[in-house]
Length: 191
Image 1: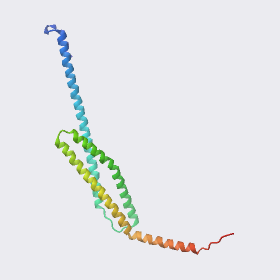
Image 2: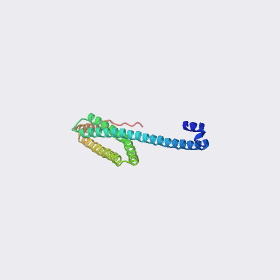
Image 3: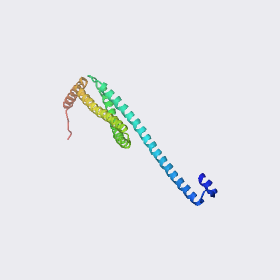
Image 4: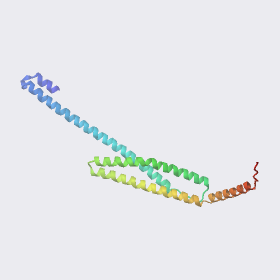
């Protein structure tokens, strides 16, 4: 704009109309370049924000997966009373609920990772994303398998529990005694 004004005021440098048109053309090209550059920077910034969000979610999910796996693999079960079984079953139910909640996050993370992988021009970045997603997916599969194995073990141990056998025996005895008492009571019908 400033150059246009200077050249327009000084007619000795050629036709002011021609200079004005050339100057406006240069200014228009400059504005287009500037807008394209700003647009490119904005897209790069959005990609970077998506990348940061992806990395944060990946880190949080990976930590949760590893913590949950460590917890499950460190649990042991020996002959315990029913109260302890109830506590263990409640903890396991809470974990299963968490696993269900994280399933959507894992699927979303995989979709975001694939999108980011296709956006990056660098093969190293793309490969890095694929490696990280594979590690998360492997941990996810292992967690689901270990959770299922633990559930089967809980059920098996519960059925073998001496406390359960004792409770069932007491219930059978109570039912037998209750039946005998009921049968001992004479029924009288009034006509």
